[in-house]
Amino acid sequence: MRLTTGIKAGAALAATALLAAGCSAGSGDAGGTGSGDSSDAAGPVELTFWTWAPNIEKVVDLWNADNPDIQVVVNKQDGGDPAVTKLLTAIEAGSGAPDIMQAEYQKIPQLVSNDAVADISGLLSDDTAGHFADGVWNAVTLGSDAVYAVPQDSGPMQFYYRADIFEKYGLDVPTTWDEYAEVARELHEQDPDKYLGTFSANDAGWFVGLTQQAGASWYGIDGDSWSVNIDSPEVQKVAEYWGGLVEDGVIDNKPMYTPEWNQGLNDGSQVGWLSAIWAPGVLSGNAPDTAGKWKMAPMPQWDVDAPATGAWGGSATAVTSQSEHPEQAARFIEWMNTDPEAVQALVDESGLYPADIPGSEDALSDPPAFFSNQKDFYEIAARTAQTTQPFTYGPNINVAYSAYNDEFAKATEARSADAFVAAVEAMQQVTVDDLVNSGFSVAE
Image 1 (cartoon, rainbow, N blue to C red):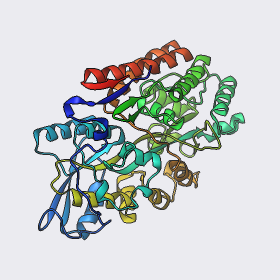
Image 2 (spheres, rainbow, N blue to C red):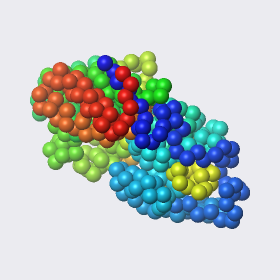
Image 3 (cartoon, rainbow, N blue to C red):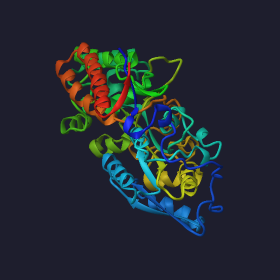
């Protein structure tokens, strides 16, 4: 039985209201870039920007130099949950909130349901959505006509593999998940100390990306309710697939980001990694001696006639509901995330992979130093990024992530496909129960 969850009664919102939650930023065209005349304040406007992106103040300096009437002040914050908690505290207190907030995609529904970010759909240029892959844009709209943020960076997933080891054992780079399973078996049979990858029971965001590629969305808007679809057929298919590989012993079942996993990257016992576009930085830090031995390819596909990928990571910039200058704030965040000069600066100064499609194609030419042997690295990345599938997060995604850690820790210990499927079913129930206990209405 599938349950759907409504919006928290205490927020006095139906789910349709959720789609327009946050203080409306008003209507009208943001006018693209440039300072223009202020519509809601006379004289220079100062905007506060909470962000954790490295060196982003250098990007902001470009704006400030050209826009003396709209000045942006960077206020560095911790990312993730601490930043969200600090913002929600300021929103509840009615003071101290910034004008602009960097937020991870999975945090946006929580901010919307708490009336912390504004709908800026009337303040953006008509072509703004066209700068982003449909799957990325969906993350800031929740599938509605409202727009709660402008995408900044994205984390399209790819397949990273040791090209030298593939050559040594005569392995073909898998293009489908059936082929991935075959290569995993062939590699492990030739050398029992080597694995094509590992199933990590403590990386829910990684598992989200795998299921997203398969067409899953863990949440959705269903009329006036949230839908919770963590146990959907798409998620169960992915869970059963990986559970089968773990059960057969051809894929490792140890967590990522441990000393053991790091050593495996270094010594060649971990021969592949399904990861995001930021993987070169991790590999260069954890396995520096293997530089030039790795290559990147698109994710194996469920359907080769419909190429798709998921995402692991990424963030957007939003205008908060308590900003006194929403029009100017919207104008700035549109510039920062779509203007060619600004996007190039985000790449050069902050080291981000831009969500902006033209930027991902134009701002990145030379491959990462760790992948100097693969000149087409960013060409492949740009193509696959455009196939990012839509995915909707929910207001208690943190609970779903925690349940993933708990349930898949047991599943990987059990080493069975059935246990993996049972894990997603348990995650579904835990997530729905939390919504109910938190005061959300539930429709059967």
